[in-house]
Image (tube, rainbow, N blue to C red):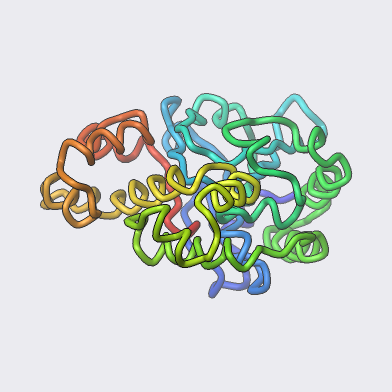
Length: 279
């Protein structure tokens, strides 16, 4: 089992996205990066994650493997594609160590072939979805003697479990949405992919877990987090830069997605988590 001290001894420094005393965030194998954003190995503390610590929605799934003091084995949960914020702090602070596999949009579908609309905004044991896969992840975390070995073993496991390739029209639509930072109509995406709006929505619900329009909104709102960290920028400026019609639409959509207003987010940024590398 990995230990806290392993954070400082990870060998492949070129793969490190973020690193602190309590966590390390690492890129997956190059051949997995179309599906997976990163591996996050965390030893939670209240200073890192207050009880109110909230993960903001990004339309992506996460697998978390957790070691709790009262359990002898690692528990593996699936958090389906998120369209709503959820509080993780109070639960995370009961965990000794957590390994998270943070997927990109539609990434979890590639490993399971399961319609993502069945999993959206749900948290459940991974064994309820795929018992064999859950057991393999649990054993990988339990049997790895350090973070370098854990990351190597996760790469090997996940590379052998990629089952379903993305559909070309989905890839095109995702690329267009990301390129336009969410400021593209479903009608235009339909034209670009040569699929009807109804067919495109069906594809998005199956692979991503949400409608085309909802996913574009998630991208547009997620794009504002970086701008909100620049405290000298006004909300009106950020609204304009992010492509909203006006400030009131920005505030409405931001609160719809995040559960708080842009100003409330700005005032309490340390209470929230979002991962910009997912897009």
